Image (cartoon, rainbow, N blue to C red):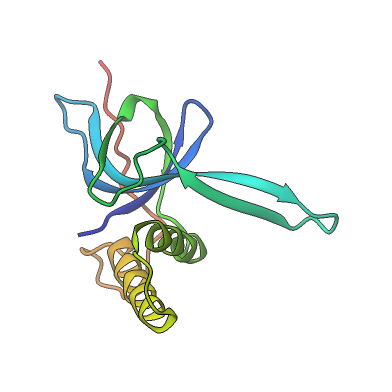
Length: 142
């Protein structure tokens, strides 16, 4: 279902997205959807940082839009933190949901966050706690 990952790109951008298909030995491209760039919006005088997200590619913010990301331009990969997953879910739900009641939206958001949290856990793990170890998607260059 969802495989939410955070990537640091060679351009310096950080994106969070749902990986639909990972690259293989023959093709360096991965298929992603719901890709959003993460950037620091500002910093208060007490040192608190404010972050924001926007669509990674303009006009590509529909849930069925897929994008291709060349894995050769990924310099880092991480499983997003719980806090980032919550923010991502709110952004994705806000961008993709038609106007509805706040109760309906709250329930949809709670279910979506739950599915993202479950998807971010390693399914092969014997533990119920999420792991910080992720499989690197990079390719071996000979």
